[in-house]
Image (tube, rainbow, N blue to C red; front, side, top):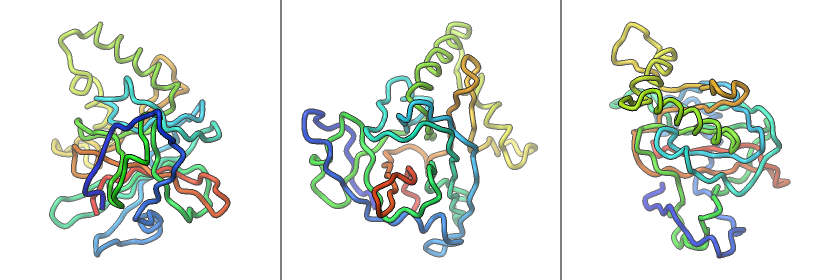
Length: 237
């Protein structure tokens, strides 16, 4: 799935056309295996969606200027759940990560887009818009959080002009979530990061499948059209 992708579209076109997913993402949260691959669910904590405008991106590369999705949700704190594929040859891989708004079971999955992405640009069933990953990470956060994260990042780099924010800060934070603290190869796969300059706001970060690439997000809606969830598909399957 997702053999071809596009990142930018024409924002002047009609953005209301819906593009359904070819995949029912319920399978990753309701089954113990998919395609003979064992699955494990991991709750990464709750993310504060303070304005209802959601950003999904690579936090170390694109968080500073990524646009939120066009659809909004009720502001609140919502759980983020990772579906981890226990692959035979590549170990644990984060396959799908879900931001859950309601317990209702989604019956439709519709592509999530930003204001610069036009569904009508996608002509084939397997084309999609997605966010780019260049640091092996994805994240969910609110639009308000973006502002304060950028301030935190700027302040950090001013204090550490020759530093690297991952090596000098985030690596130690990720390591706290390592399964084996004594294994130098286990660097930790996720982080629920509360901003030092706005401790009520947070970014939930997680590893991105097999690493860098382009990854789509989909809204899960019920029969009444209510948004139940938002997922990012890391193309593991």
